[in-house]
Image 1 (tube, rainbow, N blue to C red):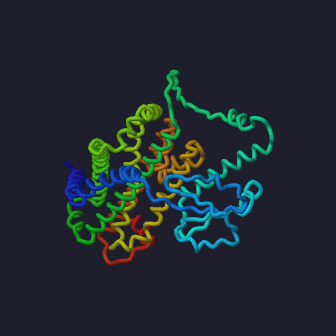
Image 2: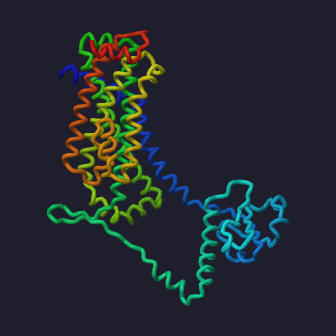
Image 3: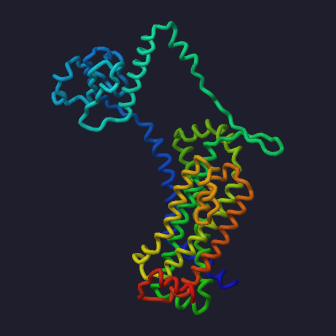
Length: 419
């Protein structure tokens, strides 16, 4: 086995055998399951407390409009708004004050409370009064059956989207599903670049501070050492990601089967629709490009993280060098989110070609059938840029890992590039 192969093996085995890796790998799926299952479980509990809502209506028109619900009891106080004192009624959750005819003055309604009222209560009051006022407005036109005419004129469209290939074969498609797939893949690559890139930087700093690197560079070239560390951690990341997917799905199935929660029933009921939507997205292609862009983006940024780690003696010294690296990543994340609304727009197009943003932004566009030449051009530019950044990082790494006690600035880094 070559030296770089031995370094990859050493780096991979050293990290996957760590207790922190094992604990984090197995705890993360549990946290994912808790985040998914907990809201469903909590939603089964209903709020049994009945809140008293006082209505002070000076017009006397809306007392019968707001009807009691499971958790709301409306009390028509029938008092003058100016005379009523809310402090005399501590058992009242909120006071709805109507000072004038809402048909003529829609803003003459106020809700008073000691604590912030729920959006559910505000929405219920608004919905009930709006329906009543709409009916009153329609009745004021004195047109026979006007309400029925309006109801009949309201048509809810059910638009189907179909994709046709060059052979005329049709498949059902869903732009919502494609957007969701793209955003999930985008977020995962964004998270992995940061997480494993930072892992590379800390690994380099640890070896530098412990002087282990002085022993290692006596046997291997610095660039082989850097690439071995970067590739080894990339394999650790892919291993961890694969385990997270398998464990999360397995735990979700076990929880659904053993607890009888509505998760399984909901999934079974929606399965035909989900499968139909999935038919419009080439998942195999997206998984393939996800791996390629994950590796390309990670390798590009990990080499820069390794260069930063080699140039400093402690993590606090990394701040000045981290900004130029993190800004493109954060910009790419925002560009990816906005590109989801217009995957063929100029922002999405250019950011999916520029190597520093393409690993994140292209994942948003892929479910929308990006032309092959754009994908090949994007990957080619990414590879060329990765080679360039690796060459620069290797020059910095070669000098930086043997430099101790010296405060490095950007001018010093430029000098190292010329050595």
